[in-house]
Image (cartoon, rainbow, N blue to C red; front, top):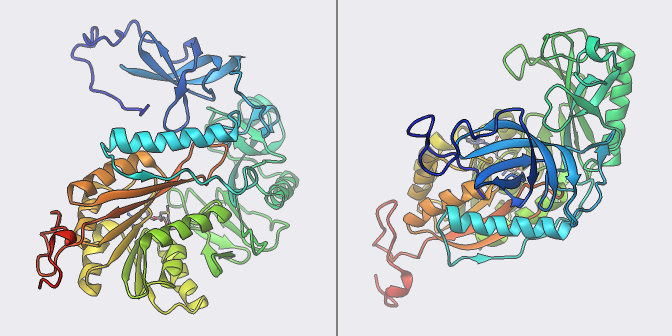
Length: 496
Ligand SMILES: C[S@@+](CC[C@H](N)C(=O)[O-])C[C@H]1O[C@@H](n2cnc3c(N)ncnc32)[C@H](O)[C@@H]1O
Protein backbone atom coordinates (compact mmCIF):
# COMPACT_ATOMS: atom_id res chain seq x y z
CA UNK A 1 0.00 0.00 0.00
CA UNK A 2 1.65 3.19 -1.16
CA UNK A 3 1.04 6.28 0.90
CA UNK A 4 -0.36 8.50 -1.77
CA UNK A 5 -2.14 11.70 -0.92
CA UNK A 6 -5.02 12.46 -3.25
CA UNK A 7 -6.54 15.68 -4.58
CA UNK A 8 -8.26 18.04 -2.11
CA UNK A 9 -12.09 17.71 -1.86
CA UNK A 10 -14.37 19.71 -4.19
CA UNK A 11 -16.13 21.15 -1.18
CA UNK A 12 -14.59 21.02 2.29
CA UNK A 13 -17.80 19.71 3.88
CA UNK A 14 -18.72 16.94 1.46
CA UNK A 15 -16.00 15.28 -0.58
CA UNK A 16 -18.71 13.44 -2.53
CA UNK A 17 -16.44 10.52 -3.44
CA UNK A 18 -17.06 8.15 -0.58
CA UNK A 19 -14.30 9.68 1.58
CA UNK A 20 -15.45 10.67 5.08
CA UNK A 21 -16.53 14.28 5.54
CA UNK A 22 -14.34 16.55 7.62
CA UNK A 23 -16.70 16.03 10.57
CA UNK A 24 -16.45 12.23 10.24
CA UNK A 25 -12.67 12.17 10.06
CA UNK A 26 -10.61 11.54 13.19
CA UNK A 27 -8.81 14.61 14.52
CA UNK A 28 -5.24 15.03 15.64
CA UNK A 29 -4.76 13.53 19.13
CA UNK A 30 -7.98 11.45 18.91
CA UNK A 31 -7.31 7.92 20.14
CA UNK A 32 -8.76 4.98 18.21
CA UNK A 33 -8.76 1.22 18.66
CA UNK A 34 -7.53 -0.31 15.44
CA UNK A 35 -6.89 -3.77 13.97
CA UNK A 36 -3.76 -3.81 11.82
CA UNK A 37 -4.28 -5.57 8.49
CA UNK A 38 -1.04 -5.21 6.58
CA UNK A 39 2.21 -3.27 6.26
CA UNK A 40 2.75 -0.15 4.14
CA UNK A 41 5.91 0.89 2.32
CA UNK A 42 8.05 2.51 4.97
CA UNK A 43 6.96 -0.13 7.50
CA UNK A 44 3.89 1.28 9.23
CA UNK A 45 0.87 -0.87 9.99
CA UNK A 46 -2.26 -0.32 7.89
CA UNK A 47 -5.71 -0.27 9.49
CA UNK A 48 -9.07 0.54 7.86
CA UNK A 49 -12.17 2.13 9.31
CA UNK A 50 -15.07 2.02 6.82
CA UNK A 51 -12.57 2.15 3.98
CA UNK A 52 -10.65 5.07 5.53
CA UNK A 53 -6.97 4.15 5.85
CA UNK A 54 -4.93 4.80 8.98
CA UNK A 55 -1.13 4.30 8.87
CA UNK A 56 0.00 3.33 12.34
CA UNK A 57 3.63 3.48 13.46
CA UNK A 58 4.77 0.88 15.99
CA UNK A 59 2.14 -1.68 14.92
CA UNK A 60 2.36 -4.96 13.00
CA UNK A 61 -0.23 -7.02 11.10
CA UNK A 62 -2.52 -8.89 13.50
CA UNK A 63 -2.03 -6.37 16.35
CA UNK A 64 -4.99 -4.60 17.99
CA UNK A 65 -3.75 -1.25 19.22
CA UNK A 66 -4.86 1.99 20.76
CA UNK A 67 -3.38 4.65 18.52
CA UNK A 68 -3.25 8.44 18.71
CA UNK A 69 -3.93 10.31 15.47
CA UNK A 70 -1.02 12.56 14.55
CA UNK A 71 -2.28 13.77 11.15
CA UNK A 72 -5.65 13.53 9.50
CA UNK A 73 -6.15 13.95 5.77
CA UNK A 74 -9.04 13.41 3.39
CA UNK A 75 -8.29 9.82 2.42
CA UNK A 76 -6.01 8.69 5.19
CA UNK A 77 -4.71 9.48 8.63
CA UNK A 78 -1.43 8.85 10.43
CA UNK A 79 -1.24 7.59 13.98
CA UNK A 80 1.23 6.23 16.52
CA UNK A 81 0.68 3.27 18.77
CA UNK A 82 -0.03 4.30 22.34
CA UNK A 83 -0.89 0.85 23.69
CA UNK A 84 -0.66 -2.67 22.33
CA UNK A 85 -4.09 -4.01 23.32
CA UNK A 86 -3.65 -7.46 21.87
CA UNK A 87 -0.46 -8.44 20.09
CA UNK A 88 -0.53 -10.41 16.85
CA UNK A 89 -0.15 -14.15 17.47
CA UNK A 90 2.74 -13.98 14.98
CA UNK A 91 4.74 -11.50 17.05
CA UNK A 92 8.15 -12.56 18.32
CA UNK A 93 9.41 -10.98 21.56
CA UNK A 94 11.34 -7.72 21.20
CA UNK A 95 15.05 -8.21 21.82
CA UNK A 96 16.22 -4.62 21.72
CA UNK A 97 14.67 -2.11 24.08
CA UNK A 98 15.91 0.91 25.94
CA UNK A 99 14.48 1.29 29.44
CA UNK A 100 11.32 -0.56 28.36
CA UNK A 101 10.92 1.45 25.12
CA UNK A 102 11.22 -0.70 22.00
CA UNK A 103 14.33 0.32 20.03
CA UNK A 104 13.21 2.94 17.50
CA UNK A 105 15.90 1.70 15.13
CA UNK A 106 14.31 -1.76 15.00
CA UNK A 107 10.60 -1.18 14.28
CA UNK A 108 10.17 -4.64 12.68
CA UNK A 109 11.83 -6.67 15.43
CA UNK A 110 8.41 -8.10 16.40
CA UNK A 111 8.25 -9.82 13.00
CA UNK A 112 10.05 -13.14 12.60
CA UNK A 113 13.02 -12.62 10.26
CA UNK A 114 11.56 -14.85 7.53
CA UNK A 115 8.41 -12.71 7.54
CA UNK A 116 10.49 -9.52 7.29
CA UNK A 117 12.15 -10.96 4.20
CA UNK A 118 8.84 -12.05 2.68
CA UNK A 119 7.36 -8.54 3.19
CA UNK A 120 10.40 -6.92 1.59
CA UNK A 121 10.33 -9.28 -1.37
CA UNK A 122 6.60 -8.63 -1.84
CA UNK A 123 7.00 -4.85 -1.57
CA UNK A 124 9.74 -4.77 -4.23
CA UNK A 125 7.58 -6.82 -6.60
CA UNK A 126 4.50 -4.69 -5.88
CA UNK A 127 6.38 -1.39 -6.35
CA UNK A 128 7.79 -2.35 -9.74
CA UNK A 129 4.54 -3.81 -11.04
CA UNK A 130 2.00 -1.41 -9.53
CA UNK A 131 3.87 1.92 -9.36
CA UNK A 132 6.19 1.27 -12.30
CA UNK A 133 3.68 -0.69 -14.42
CA UNK A 134 6.51 -3.07 -15.31
CA UNK A 135 6.55 -6.81 -15.86
CA UNK A 136 8.59 -9.46 -17.64
CA UNK A 137 11.56 -9.02 -15.29
CA UNK A 138 13.23 -11.65 -13.17
CA UNK A 139 12.88 -11.02 -9.45
CA UNK A 140 15.54 -12.99 -7.60
CA UNK A 141 14.85 -14.11 -4.02
CA UNK A 142 16.00 -11.53 -1.48
CA UNK A 143 19.53 -12.08 -0.19
CA UNK A 144 19.24 -12.38 3.62
CA UNK A 145 21.59 -10.39 5.85
CA UNK A 146 24.73 -12.09 7.15
CA UNK A 147 24.00 -10.73 10.64
CA UNK A 148 20.50 -9.97 11.96
CA UNK A 149 21.74 -7.92 14.91
CA UNK A 150 24.77 -5.71 15.63
CA UNK A 151 25.22 -5.08 11.92
CA UNK A 152 25.24 -1.28 11.84
CA UNK A 153 28.64 0.40 11.55
CA UNK A 154 27.21 3.84 12.34
CA UNK A 155 24.70 5.08 14.90
CA UNK A 156 23.54 8.53 15.80
CA UNK A 157 22.58 9.22 19.40
CA UNK A 158 20.85 12.24 20.94
CA UNK A 159 21.49 13.90 24.28
CA UNK A 160 18.62 14.68 26.64
CA UNK A 161 17.55 14.54 30.24
CA UNK A 162 15.86 11.58 31.88
CA UNK A 163 12.17 12.23 32.31
CA UNK A 164 9.18 12.79 30.17
CA UNK A 165 9.71 16.17 28.62
CA UNK A 166 13.39 16.55 28.13
CA UNK A 167 13.79 19.92 29.84
CA UNK A 168 15.65 20.20 33.10
CA UNK A 169 12.95 21.88 35.18
CA UNK A 170 10.27 19.45 34.10
CA UNK A 171 12.25 16.29 34.57
CA UNK A 172 15.04 17.17 36.97
CA UNK A 173 16.64 14.10 35.47
CA UNK A 174 20.22 13.25 34.74
CA UNK A 175 21.79 13.47 31.33
CA UNK A 176 20.92 10.60 28.98
CA UNK A 177 22.36 9.63 25.60
CA UNK A 178 20.29 7.47 23.34
CA UNK A 179 17.34 7.65 20.97
CA UNK A 180 14.16 9.64 20.58
CA UNK A 181 11.25 7.70 22.04
CA UNK A 182 8.95 6.58 19.22
CA UNK A 183 6.98 9.50 17.87
CA UNK A 184 8.50 11.92 20.41
CA UNK A 185 10.95 14.68 19.48
CA UNK A 186 11.12 15.88 23.09
CA UNK A 187 11.90 12.64 24.88
CA UNK A 188 15.20 10.78 24.78
CA UNK A 189 15.55 7.25 26.09
CA UNK A 190 18.95 6.26 27.40
CA UNK A 191 20.72 3.50 25.44
CA UNK A 192 22.92 1.00 27.29
CA UNK A 193 23.26 -1.87 24.85
CA UNK A 194 21.69 -1.26 21.47
CA UNK A 195 21.59 -4.57 19.60
CA UNK A 196 21.94 -2.84 16.24
CA UNK A 197 25.40 -1.59 17.28
CA UNK A 198 28.54 -3.56 18.04
CA UNK A 199 29.75 -3.95 21.62
CA UNK A 200 32.58 -1.57 20.73
CA UNK A 201 30.18 1.12 19.54
CA UNK A 202 28.04 0.72 22.68
CA UNK A 203 31.09 0.95 24.92
CA UNK A 204 32.26 4.17 23.22
CA UNK A 205 28.82 5.76 23.61
CA UNK A 206 28.62 4.79 27.28
CA UNK A 207 32.11 6.16 27.90
CA UNK A 208 31.19 9.46 26.27
CA UNK A 209 27.95 9.69 28.25
CA UNK A 210 29.92 9.24 31.49
CA UNK A 211 32.32 11.95 30.35
CA UNK A 212 29.43 14.28 29.42
CA UNK A 213 27.85 13.78 32.86
CA UNK A 214 31.16 14.62 34.51
CA UNK A 215 31.59 17.83 32.48
CA UNK A 216 28.18 19.09 33.65
CA UNK A 217 27.56 20.40 30.12
CA UNK A 218 23.80 20.62 29.55
CA UNK A 219 22.02 18.82 26.75
CA UNK A 220 20.63 21.19 24.14
CA UNK A 221 16.93 21.91 24.67
CA UNK A 222 15.14 22.64 21.41
CA UNK A 223 12.30 24.54 23.08
CA UNK A 224 14.39 26.99 25.09
CA UNK A 225 17.33 26.80 22.66
CA UNK A 226 19.67 26.54 25.62
CA UNK A 227 22.26 23.90 26.37
CA UNK A 228 25.24 22.51 24.50
CA UNK A 229 25.24 18.79 23.73
CA UNK A 230 23.11 17.73 20.75
CA UNK A 231 24.18 14.52 19.02
CA UNK A 232 26.90 11.95 18.97
CA UNK A 233 27.62 9.94 15.84
CA UNK A 234 29.80 6.88 16.24
CA UNK A 235 31.07 5.16 13.12
CA UNK A 236 33.14 2.05 13.18
CA UNK A 237 35.62 0.43 10.85
CA UNK A 238 34.45 -3.14 11.34
CA UNK A 239 37.60 -4.60 9.81
CA UNK A 240 40.11 -2.07 11.10
CA UNK A 241 38.69 -1.71 14.60
CA UNK A 242 38.84 2.10 14.31
CA UNK A 243 36.14 4.32 15.76
CA UNK A 244 35.19 7.82 14.68
CA UNK A 245 33.12 9.87 17.11
CA UNK A 246 31.50 13.11 16.06
CA UNK A 247 30.08 15.28 18.76
CA UNK A 248 27.58 17.87 17.57
CA UNK A 249 27.23 20.77 19.95
CA UNK A 250 26.31 24.41 20.22
CA UNK A 251 29.17 26.87 20.43
CA UNK A 252 30.80 26.33 23.83
CA UNK A 253 34.05 25.57 25.56
CA UNK A 254 34.16 21.80 25.38
CA UNK A 255 36.65 20.02 27.64
CA UNK A 256 38.68 17.45 25.78
CA UNK A 257 36.87 14.10 25.78
CA UNK A 258 38.59 10.95 27.08
CA UNK A 259 38.66 9.34 23.65
CA UNK A 260 41.75 10.87 22.22
CA UNK A 261 41.26 10.34 18.49
CA UNK A 262 38.65 10.88 15.83
CA UNK A 263 36.62 13.39 17.81
CA UNK A 264 35.15 16.32 15.95
CA UNK A 265 33.20 19.16 17.44
CA UNK A 266 30.75 21.10 15.32
CA UNK A 267 28.56 24.09 15.84
CA UNK A 268 25.31 23.52 14.00
CA UNK A 269 24.15 27.11 14.58
CA UNK A 270 27.12 28.58 12.74
CA UNK A 271 25.74 27.75 9.31
CA UNK A 272 22.51 25.89 9.65
CA UNK A 273 23.45 22.32 10.22
CA UNK A 274 27.15 22.05 9.86
CA UNK A 275 29.40 24.75 11.19
CA UNK A 276 33.13 25.02 11.82
CA UNK A 277 34.70 21.83 12.98
CA UNK A 278 37.43 21.38 15.50
CA UNK A 279 39.11 18.09 14.97
CA UNK A 280 40.61 16.84 18.18
CA UNK A 281 41.96 13.77 16.51
CA UNK A 282 42.20 11.99 13.20
CA UNK A 283 39.64 13.28 10.73
CA UNK A 284 39.37 9.98 8.89
CA UNK A 285 38.20 6.51 9.60
CA UNK A 286 39.71 3.65 7.65
CA UNK A 287 37.87 0.55 6.52
CA UNK A 288 38.42 -2.47 4.31
CA UNK A 289 35.89 -3.61 1.76
CA UNK A 290 36.15 -6.11 -1.10
CA UNK A 291 39.88 -6.41 -0.46
CA UNK A 292 40.41 -2.64 -0.83
CA UNK A 293 41.28 -0.06 1.83
CA UNK A 294 39.22 3.11 2.14
CA UNK A 295 39.53 6.30 4.10
CA UNK A 296 36.21 7.88 5.03
CA UNK A 297 35.91 11.49 6.11
CA UNK A 298 33.14 12.24 8.54
CA UNK A 299 30.89 14.07 6.08
CA UNK A 300 31.07 11.34 3.46
CA UNK A 301 28.50 8.61 2.95
CA UNK A 302 29.53 5.06 3.71
CA UNK A 303 27.22 2.02 3.50
CA UNK A 304 25.92 1.31 7.02
CA UNK A 305 26.16 -2.47 6.82
CA UNK A 306 29.76 -3.24 5.94
CA UNK A 307 29.31 -7.00 5.44
CA UNK A 308 26.25 -6.64 3.19
CA UNK A 309 27.82 -3.75 1.27
CA UNK A 310 30.32 -6.28 -0.06
CA UNK A 311 27.48 -8.49 -1.32
CA UNK A 312 25.74 -5.46 -2.82
CA UNK A 313 28.87 -4.38 -4.70
CA UNK A 314 29.56 -7.91 -5.93
CA UNK A 315 26.02 -8.08 -7.33
CA UNK A 316 26.43 -4.69 -9.01
CA UNK A 317 29.76 -5.81 -10.48
CA UNK A 318 28.23 -9.02 -11.79
CA UNK A 319 25.29 -7.17 -13.36
CA UNK A 320 27.66 -4.66 -14.98
CA UNK A 321 28.99 -7.62 -17.01
CA UNK A 322 32.41 -6.07 -17.54
CA UNK A 323 35.09 -7.61 -19.76
CA UNK A 324 38.02 -5.31 -18.93
CA UNK A 325 37.77 -2.64 -21.62
CA UNK A 326 34.52 -0.79 -20.87
CA UNK A 327 34.02 2.83 -19.92
CA UNK A 328 31.87 2.93 -16.80
CA UNK A 329 30.16 5.86 -15.07
CA UNK A 330 29.56 5.51 -11.33
CA UNK A 331 27.02 8.22 -10.55
CA UNK A 332 26.50 9.14 -6.86
CA UNK A 333 29.86 7.52 -6.18
CA UNK A 334 30.49 8.66 -2.58
CA UNK A 335 34.09 7.89 -1.54
CA UNK A 336 34.57 5.71 -4.60
CA UNK A 337 33.95 2.32 -2.99
CA UNK A 338 31.93 0.82 -5.83
CA UNK A 339 33.98 2.72 -8.43
CA UNK A 340 37.19 1.03 -7.31
CA UNK A 341 35.52 -2.38 -7.24
CA UNK A 342 34.28 -1.79 -10.81
CA UNK A 343 37.66 -0.43 -11.94
CA UNK A 344 39.28 -3.84 -11.46
CA UNK A 345 37.24 -5.21 -14.36
CA UNK A 346 36.75 -2.07 -16.49
CA UNK A 347 38.84 -0.05 -18.89
CA UNK A 348 38.06 3.19 -17.07
CA UNK A 349 35.64 4.38 -14.40
CA UNK A 350 34.36 7.92 -13.91
CA UNK A 351 32.61 8.87 -10.67
CA UNK A 352 30.42 11.89 -9.90
CA UNK A 353 29.55 12.90 -6.35
CA UNK A 354 28.10 16.02 -4.72
CA UNK A 355 30.10 16.09 -1.48
CA UNK A 356 33.58 17.59 -2.03
CA UNK A 357 35.15 15.75 0.91
CA UNK A 358 33.87 12.44 -0.46
CA UNK A 359 35.53 13.17 -3.82
CA UNK A 360 38.81 14.01 -2.06
CA UNK A 361 38.46 10.66 -0.27
CA UNK A 362 37.68 8.89 -3.56
CA UNK A 363 40.83 10.30 -5.19
CA UNK A 364 42.93 9.34 -2.17
CA UNK A 365 41.33 5.91 -2.12
CA UNK A 366 42.21 5.30 -5.76
CA UNK A 367 45.82 6.27 -4.96
CA UNK A 368 45.90 4.23 -1.77
CA UNK A 369 44.86 1.11 -3.67
CA UNK A 370 47.04 1.72 -6.72
CA UNK A 371 44.00 2.08 -9.00
CA UNK A 372 44.97 4.19 -12.00
CA UNK A 373 41.83 3.87 -14.12
CA UNK A 374 39.30 5.62 -11.88
CA UNK A 375 38.69 9.38 -12.03
CA UNK A 376 36.29 11.50 -10.02
CA UNK A 377 34.38 14.74 -10.49
CA UNK A 378 32.79 16.74 -7.68
CA UNK A 379 29.37 18.10 -8.55
CA UNK A 380 25.69 17.51 -8.99
CA UNK A 381 24.79 14.54 -11.19
CA UNK A 382 22.01 16.69 -12.67
CA UNK A 383 24.49 19.10 -14.24
CA UNK A 384 27.55 16.86 -14.31
CA UNK A 385 26.57 14.19 -16.84
CA UNK A 386 26.68 16.26 -20.04
CA UNK A 387 30.16 17.75 -19.40
CA UNK A 388 31.43 14.29 -18.52
CA UNK A 389 29.97 12.88 -21.74
CA UNK A 390 31.78 15.59 -23.69
CA UNK A 391 35.03 14.88 -21.88
CA UNK A 392 35.02 11.09 -22.08
CA UNK A 393 32.61 9.98 -24.79
CA UNK A 394 29.76 7.57 -24.20
CA UNK A 395 29.97 5.03 -21.40
CA UNK A 396 29.24 1.36 -21.99
CA UNK A 397 27.78 0.90 -18.54
CA UNK A 398 26.30 3.39 -16.09
CA UNK A 399 25.93 2.54 -12.41
CA UNK A 400 23.65 4.76 -10.32
CA UNK A 401 23.23 4.64 -6.55
CA UNK A 402 21.05 7.63 -5.63
CA UNK A 403 19.62 8.59 -2.21
CA UNK A 404 16.09 7.47 -1.27
CA UNK A 405 14.42 10.14 -3.40
CA UNK A 406 15.72 8.34 -6.49
CA UNK A 407 16.45 10.16 -9.76
CA UNK A 408 14.58 13.22 -10.97
CA UNK A 409 13.00 12.95 -14.42
CA UNK A 410 15.70 15.29 -15.70
CA UNK A 411 18.50 13.08 -14.41
CA UNK A 412 16.83 10.07 -16.04
CA UNK A 413 16.77 12.02 -19.33
CA UNK A 414 20.49 12.74 -18.94
CA UNK A 415 21.05 9.07 -18.26
CA UNK A 416 19.22 8.16 -21.44
CA UNK A 417 21.46 10.58 -23.36
CA UNK A 418 24.46 8.50 -22.26
CA UNK A 419 23.16 5.67 -24.48
CA UNK A 420 24.88 3.09 -22.30
CA UNK A 421 24.12 -0.50 -23.12
CA UNK A 422 23.57 -1.35 -19.48
CA UNK A 423 22.37 0.54 -16.45
CA UNK A 424 22.93 -0.98 -13.04
CA UNK A 425 20.64 0.75 -10.57
CA UNK A 426 21.46 0.32 -6.87
CA UNK A 427 18.35 1.47 -5.04
CA UNK A 428 17.48 1.97 -1.39
CA UNK A 429 13.85 2.66 -2.22
CA UNK A 430 11.82 0.50 -4.64
CA UNK A 431 9.04 3.12 -4.77
CA UNK A 432 11.42 5.58 -6.46
CA UNK A 433 13.25 2.93 -8.48
CA UNK A 434 9.87 1.97 -10.02
CA UNK A 435 9.03 5.29 -11.77
CA UNK A 436 12.70 5.71 -12.79
CA UNK A 437 12.72 2.24 -14.35
CA UNK A 438 9.41 3.01 -16.07
CA UNK A 439 10.84 6.22 -17.60
CA UNK A 440 13.92 4.31 -18.75
CA UNK A 441 11.55 1.68 -20.17
CA UNK A 442 9.87 4.33 -22.33
CA UNK A 443 13.30 5.04 -23.82
CA UNK A 444 13.92 1.41 -24.69
CA UNK A 445 15.62 0.05 -21.56
CA UNK A 446 14.22 -3.22 -20.31
CA UNK A 447 14.28 -4.18 -16.68
CA UNK A 448 15.90 -7.60 -16.82
CA UNK A 449 16.81 -8.53 -13.29
CA UNK A 450 16.01 -7.29 -9.82
CA UNK A 451 17.85 -8.56 -6.77
CA UNK A 452 16.67 -7.39 -3.32
CA UNK A 453 19.36 -7.43 -0.62
CA UNK A 454 18.60 -7.20 3.09
CA UNK A 455 20.99 -4.58 4.40
CA UNK A 456 18.78 -3.54 7.33
CA UNK A 457 17.26 -6.41 9.35
CA UNK A 458 14.61 -5.45 11.94
CA UNK A 459 13.67 -2.43 9.81
CA UNK A 460 11.44 -1.91 6.77
CA UNK A 461 14.31 -0.53 4.65
CA UNK A 462 14.81 -2.32 1.35
CA UNK A 463 17.88 -2.26 -0.87
CA UNK A 464 17.97 -3.79 -4.32
CA UNK A 465 20.11 -3.92 -7.42
CA UNK A 466 18.43 -3.72 -10.82
CA UNK A 467 19.81 -4.43 -14.26
CA UNK A 468 18.33 -2.50 -17.19
CA UNK A 469 19.49 -3.17 -20.72
CA UNK A 470 19.00 -1.47 -24.02
CA UNK A 471 18.61 -3.66 -27.07
CA UNK A 472 21.83 -3.74 -29.07
CA UNK A 473 21.60 -1.30 -31.98
CA UNK A 474 23.06 -1.94 -35.41
CA UNK A 475 26.26 -0.04 -36.12
CA UNK A 476 25.56 3.13 -38.08
CA UNK A 477 21.95 3.26 -36.95
CA UNK A 478 22.37 4.80 -33.53
CA UNK A 479 18.93 5.92 -32.39
CA UNK A 480 18.10 9.44 -31.33
CA UNK A 481 18.70 9.84 -27.62
CA UNK A 482 15.67 8.53 -25.79
CA UNK A 483 14.35 6.36 -28.63
CA UNK A 484 14.56 2.58 -28.71
CA UNK A 485 17.10 1.21 -31.18
CA UNK A 486 16.83 -1.64 -33.69
CA UNK A 487 17.35 -5.02 -32.11
CA UNK A 488 20.77 -6.55 -32.90
CA UNK A 489 18.96 -9.82 -33.55
CA UNK A 490 17.20 -8.08 -36.48
CA UNK A 491 20.50 -7.21 -38.17
CA UNK A 492 21.96 -9.75 -40.61
CA UNK A 493 25.44 -11.08 -39.81
CA UNK A 494 28.14 -8.93 -41.39
CA UNK A 495 25.82 -6.01 -42.08
CA UNK A 496 27.70 -2.68 -42.10
C1 LIG B 1 23.32 6.04 -1.44
S1 LIG B 1 24.80 6.98 -1.43
C2 LIG B 1 25.82 5.95 -2.45
C3 LIG B 1 27.29 6.22 -2.39
C4 LIG B 1 28.20 5.12 -2.95
N1 LIG B 1 27.72 4.58 -4.19
C5 LIG B 1 28.43 4.03 -1.92
O1 LIG B 1 28.01 2.89 -2.13
O2 LIG B 1 29.05 4.33 -0.89
C6 LIG B 1 24.36 8.34 -2.43
C7 LIG B 1 25.46 9.35 -2.64
O3 LIG B 1 24.95 10.33 -3.54
C8 LIG B 1 25.45 11.60 -3.16
N2 LIG B 1 24.53 12.57 -3.77
C9 LIG B 1 23.31 12.96 -3.34
N3 LIG B 1 22.75 13.80 -4.21
C10 LIG B 1 23.61 13.96 -5.24
C11 LIG B 1 23.59 14.72 -6.44
N4 LIG B 1 22.55 15.48 -6.76
N5 LIG B 1 24.65 14.64 -7.26
C12 LIG B 1 25.73 13.87 -6.94
N6 LIG B 1 25.79 13.14 -5.81
C13 LIG B 1 24.76 13.18 -4.96
C14 LIG B 1 25.47 11.54 -1.65
O4 LIG B 1 26.37 12.48 -1.12
C15 LIG B 1 25.92 10.10 -1.42
O5 LIG B 1 27.32 10.02 -1.34
